[in-house]
Amino acid sequence: MSAILVTGGAGFIGSAVVRRLVAAGHHVVTLDKLTYSGTRASLRDVEQAANHRFVEGDIGDQAMVGALLREERIEGVMHLAAESHVDRSIDGPGVFIETNVLGTYRLLQAVLDYWRSLEGAQRDNFRFHHISTDEVFGDLPFDSGFFTEETPYAPSSPYSASKAASDHLVRAWHHTYGLPVVLSNCSNNYGPYHFPEKLIPLVILNALEGKPLPVYGKGENVRDWLFVEDHAAALEAVLTRGAVGESYNVGGRAERTNLQVVEAICDALDVRRPLPDGTPRRALVTFVTDRPGHDRRYAIDCAKIERELGWVPSVSFEEGLARTVDWYLDNEWWWGPLRARYAGERLGRG
Ligand code: NAD
Ligand code: DAU
Image 1 (tube, protein in one colour):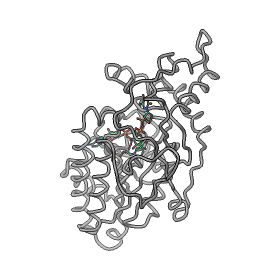
Image 2 (tube, helix red, strand yellow):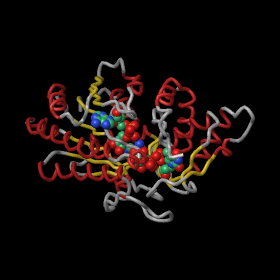
Image 3 (cartoon, helix red, strand yellow):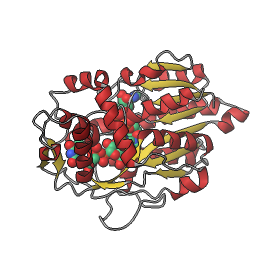
Image 4 (cartoon, helix red, strand yellow):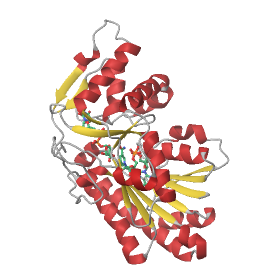
């Protein structure tokens, strides 16, 4: 595809996708509203690229999106724009319904109008890719089970319910109107440019500064971690080779308890930058009130994307975490202003 629209391209995963597609030579248009979690700083690497254009705007602005699709002769849309943080959805669900449900609906309407105006190969080859989450499947027991593409939806939080709703809308626009869609549901990502309210960047930066490390409950909850660049590769595979109407689960085959993740970060920083008084950072772990409705475990069976599209995770959790810690140590220019701007907000439930 030569012209791809990436919504949410100034966010964590979106910016990794944009960097990858631009490097591969596609013409990429980023559409982003620049909410608290989006920043043009995350697109610094592609700022000067002739094959990238940044547009500040809302996915819910149908007239603007329609004009953009026509002007750029877009051949594929990768829809990542969303409110993405579970804790924020518990404290204020309204914006999650507005962006993730209504925003996706309005985007679908603009895309459908545009797609209907296309003819021949342009119409046949067009794709709308909805980037979703494993959280739509809900809560797994600690000791058994994996999410497959057939697992029934059972979202627990306002965030995951809004993402489940948007998945259903995307499938309905395919079944009812014929819009050529593909979907993917991914596990927890981590890596560079991760907004410092999420577990891994929050803990890296608090630990760097010798601050308490808030661990919800007993730290026993399990997540399946995927390095963000592996996710970007999976998304390119789904967009370009995925079968229309299908969804693909994406995961890292790297289940860890939250406490294991936090302790691994402590150890990595102790080696690289010991605290002045020599205290091991594990002593900073602070168990705090649990997240309401906290899902115990997420675990992805990604056999389908491996089998059908030939994608496999290439970065181990140990390597990816080391690269991530090093990136935060080297890139205070990126996270420093964000920490300063959001210092008044609670970062994490602790
Ligand atoms: P993020 O919060 O870092 O980025 C979201 C981006 O969307 C931001 O740049 C924001 O400015 C933009 N945005 C928000 N509302 C918008 C609107 N109305 N119009 C245009 N842009 C808007 O999120 P992320 O972690 O990069 O997640 C991206 C997508 O991937 C989300 O849809 C999320 O549900 C999904 N996902 C995330 C993970 C993860 O571990 N982070 C895992 C699986 C799926
Ligand atoms: O599974 C995919 C999802 O992963 C994505 O859809 C979401 O957009 C993304 O934010 C992420 O959701 P989580 O809620 O799993 O991520 P978070 O980093 O917020 O939390 C990871 C785990 O760590 C979770 O079990 C809660 C816990 N936690 C989180 C924070 C912020 C803590 O123990 N302490 C904390 O301070």
